[in-house]
Image 1 (cartoon, rainbow, N blue to C red):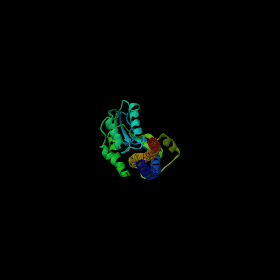
Image 2: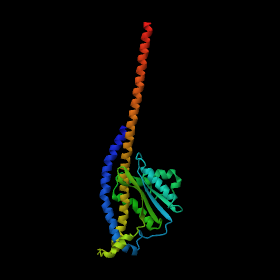
Image 3: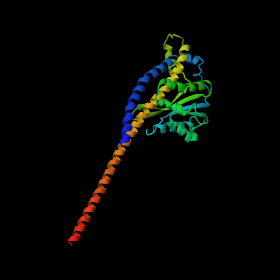
Image 4: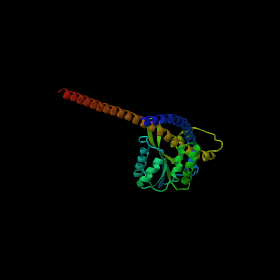
Amino acid sequence: MQITSAMKMVSAAKLKRAQDSITQMRPYAQKLQQMLGNLTETMLEMENPYATERPVNKVLVIAITSNRGLCGGFNANIIKQVARLSATELAGKEVTLYPIGKKAADAFKRDARLYSGEALMNHTEACTIFDDMNYQKAADIFQPVMDAYAAGSFDEVLVIYNQFKNAATQLVTTESLLPVKADENAVASLENNDYIFQPGKEELLEVLIPTALKTAFYKGLKDSLASEHGARMTAMHKATDNASDLLGDLKLTYNKARQAAITTEILEIVGGAEALNG
């Protein structure tokens, strides 16, 4: 009970920092997507390697889990989602899994049905991002994915992670990062807008699209990290409560046994005294 209580307190402290981090980042990521929306019409016209859509035959699935357990169904939900997608929407397609986090890597190694092909990089290298996570590390990990898509190694890139809602709720989310798709609603809304871009739209997109992709991946990592701390705090809270209940039951059982032993000793003493008097 002392261990789970301490883990709960540690996760609560880490959750506060992780929650503040993802809360502060979301407006930036949303604004970046909005800027891409304003350039959607141009994106439809230009030939960008990350916006080129192809028939989907080869899919890369990035599964983001944690390096440690004791966080309830946090990791299991991601693994189940990967298995569900592999058996339904991605059935018949060449699926390559890219684990981010030791729990995903271990699960894919144990169950051959979930794993086909080699990961883009050693999973231990990808796992180190959680030790001291920052944008540059996320960008370095995701750049080979972007290069592989541009080279035609994959036709679609999906990322599966736990989206942080609150300490008790994490939403398993599946997002398509590549190809970058034009927002039809943004195209319709641009009909009444007349923006002046400096430099030109094409030059802006050459920078914005890679930045938006890396930012979306980084946001997924931050969401997953905050969700992990929330899930672990909740799991350890429940474990502490269960341990407290168990401790109460054990104390009651111990007291009953102790009282029974005392009563037996008293009866034996009284019985011995009566025997002597007789």
